[in-house]
Image 1 (tube, one colour):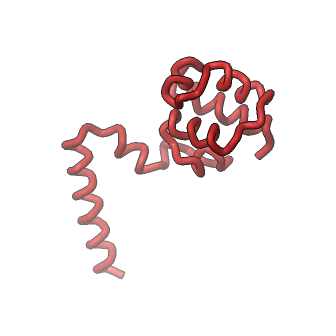
Image 2 (cartoon, helix red, strand yellow):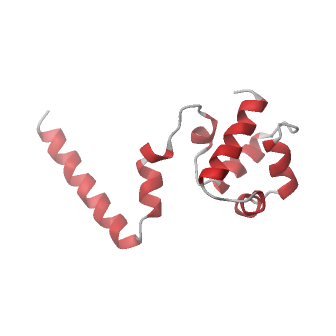
Image 3 (cartoon, rainbow, N blue to C red):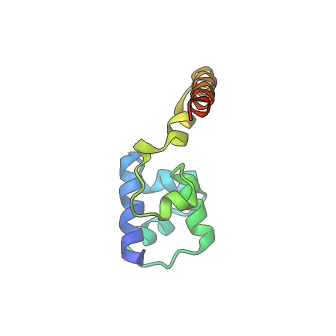
Amino acid sequence: MTKVEFAARVRELRARRKLTQEALAEASGLAADTIRRVEYASFNASLDTINKLAKGLDLTTTQLMVDSYDEADDLAVILRRLPETEKRLACAMMGTLFVHAAANR
């Protein structure tokens, strides 16, 4: 991924989450100016900066870096957004599905 592609990806993911650059800066522990520089491809982001951006966007570093990631397909993202009671229920249901699928192989 080039610097320009990375910039577009960060901008797109931030916009999908309806975050301002300032809100992403706060969530990631980076300066708002760093977010701007990343999004305008005027900054070579270090691994530390990339990790912080991923955290601020509620993604893994890998999810941030791959071109085809679609958070709608990411079960972990969906689960993290559920209230605790529903999260436990969803995990129990998935466990039951896993056991059922394993038994029918």
